[in-house]
Image (cartoon, rainbow, N blue to C red; front, side):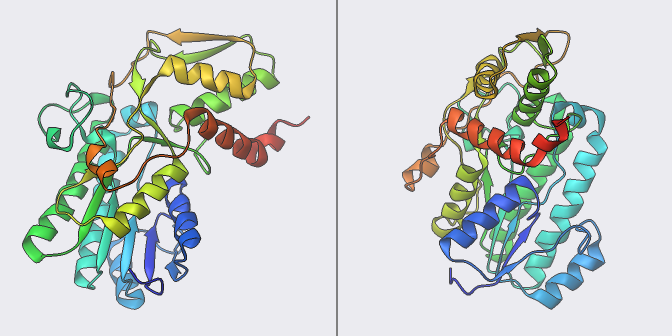
Length: 314
């Protein structure tokens, strides 16, 4: 791609989108098109169509999505299904109608069947039932990656899809009602430390596994795919290693310097027991993750303190 190309990053204010913007600028791509939700509501088809007609981006990253943790997904499956399908439909259709040269769709490892073999290979898609606790979101992401695949096959477009694992890091959502596991545990343990709480409650047994990717690694991998990968089918990106929730919690406890107890509430669901991605295809292209789990947690906690620390001042 040319550094002067007009690149639209949908969802640039979110954790994933903002990391992609940082990575693009670091690489020398400075002709970026960025619109906040107040400037462009991606669920409004006419507005999205007009935007593409006016801006005519050469390439785009579809990082905009309604996201949330297990509690939010369980309580709002309609929202996670419908809003994501609408956003994806509006953007992908408008991209095609306005001759976007390359589109990168950001998916999620939750697309895989809940009882699929580990590690998760791309070929396992749609080989069994999905995890019930985030089925709506997973179905929407499958629709998005399949839309890209079908456009490529029917029209010869260059729309690629990358499937990352659980993402955490700078600019994460620390709202306990909607946060993913890393952000939720960081906030819980920080508050427990500040308010001298003897115990932090954690959903599930702690024995379930998660592959966790620092958001700057995810952005770097996504741009690497943007520059080096062309293919009809989606491709996994990730670190190729997973941790139990108990191991994650202990790491966060150490970084936060919380000295209380961790209580695993087994009356709450674990979600999918394990999901670690097979990233052999992607690593063969020449990419590997840079950040360890502890390094990523430290960077995330430092960002949290800078942006939320004042909320706990006397």
